[in-house]
Length: 460
Image (cartoon, rainbow, N blue to C red; front, side, top):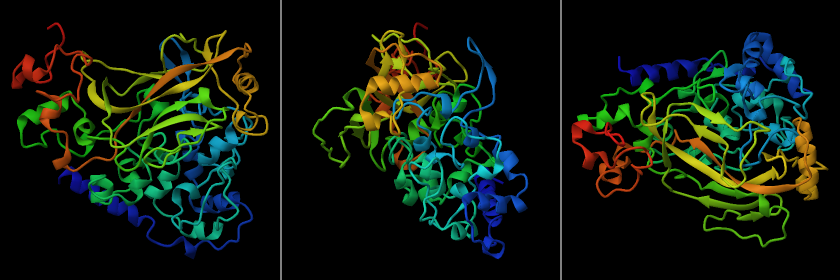
């Protein structure tokens, strides 16, 4: 049986698991969301044990040995990005996307199963909402009984609450996941819009451990899956195109532009935050300045940037020294033209400026949220003092801003085959790929023959 047909049967089977209404088993009322969780665990006894081992719960992976780093565990809770920068001291705001209840500070008990939020992933009533600044607690308007009775297989809406809308709004972080996917047509995404897939049809879970690799797991180079798990390498009618699969990721040709649904943020300049500047908007209606956050740029229907990648990446760790005269890479992709495990992949590259300790030369972890946070005081020195102390670093008292960049993989919004990248967009007069930067001597179509395509390397 073809793999696509097998996958379709799996999707149907998985949806049947939740076919019977939980209204037959759940009555309520509930005085707290934790009581809902207790009710869930009466039947799903292993769910908490399994879920509490995952990245979705811990915001960190398992410990592993990293070259030059010793034993580390990496995840959202200890990474630095160039959006809202870091989680420590900003928990109540950041953890509104945590699948748990009450992570308001560093004392949160990760061993208490009753604080697992089953509803955020499984409710399908549309009546359940998290409070944006409530440390993961549901809003007072949420109908806990209706939400609990509606539970089912996670939908795009369940996943999208955090994954489409992270960073302060839809499309901010990812250029291939935003709220347009909730009602996608096949032109935006052939899987979700054309075939009716939900996120979990590809991002399947084994004991609540969901398949997929993002920043927390890319350093460990685990959790990956690819298009080739469902599609054959000899899928195309033209053998020349099939040869590309060994060197070019499927997404490179089949996601021709990013931010095709909604605009994505491409620049965030924290050095302008706190200033009293005019608030203006771009052609998409997006705000270009906010006193709390600084200056922004947005883009829509743009080409990704292309780099060799083998699935792994190295990350800036809190406290690492920087050279402020150069752009700081918050993650560095592994792979190159000579790496047999590497392919040319598309990326959104997020760029911006963020604070650093100008004497100690390491990035800041600003305290943004709350009474003493920058969003209330507009005092960078106080914000950095509080934030750096929370991660075990002393602030020198001197700060400045440095340019940073961060690479975000592009895997979603796969276009129909007829809209895939054309050969001439990369070869001949096409300029989509920078062949020299990728390590080639030039365009392989010019430097070699069709049989050599993808194999001509610089200096060889």
